[in-house]
Image 1 (cartoon, helix red, strand yellow):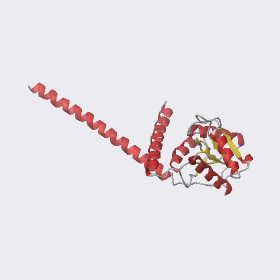
Image 2 (tube, one colour):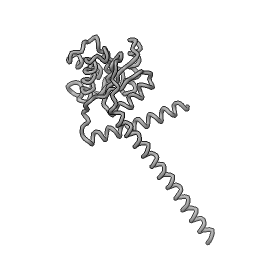
Image 3 (cartoon, one colour):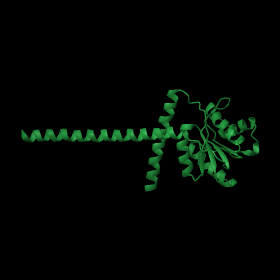
Length: 213
């Protein structure tokens, strides 16, 4: 009877340890996620605009009649920076999306010219499909043109991840988020923040393991 009682008690103790471990793990994940989300939200208000060689506009999907509302906000901000003399060139990024035969960058370049930006001051990066490849390819174009610094333009809550990517690909970059965004409702902002937090944390773990191995 005593042996059976001891086995039962050990079993209960083991289950409690496992439960405690998972509760601690969940708490750690929640804290990391919460800290990252707050950090991204706070960074979204940081505008480092200053004189640079080029303005890099991170790509966004097109709509049926041209640049999407989200992309248009980014392009309009780049126009403001250009007109205020922060840079003499605008580099728009984005490859050919699904269902399209024109690259995001090409359509964005046409939009810029319609708004009065001279064609010779517009550079196109037409191969990328992700934010990271936006910036990797933009760095190549910067090197080809002898540019050493860039203003990065995107939606506010996209900026922290974009700036980390820019650092990793070797761009001397400054953050300049759009002053307005199409993500206006609470639901859309929360969804954007949660998505950015998840991707940012995943990329940070990737960097750690990549450096280790």
